[in-house]
Image 1 (cartoon, rainbow, N blue to C red):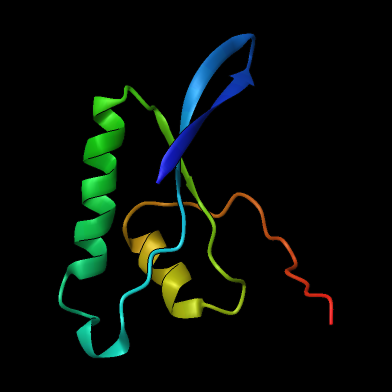
Image 2: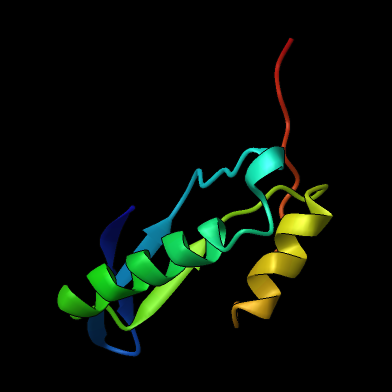
Length: 84
């Protein structure tokens, strides 16, 4: 969790960034992921952050649906690559 400054429409905004949240399969559907997101939102509010971004893997359909249920909207779809 962290934040960066973004220059939008001639004003600088703090943007919260959530990354690398994982809940092991046996513990899913217990509210842990939702609790982590809500905790992050609480911290970001303290920091006066108005916008939160996160990245989720393109093939992580369960994760995408989870974030949608929490109010996140898909803004950009990117292709992940790896060099071998």
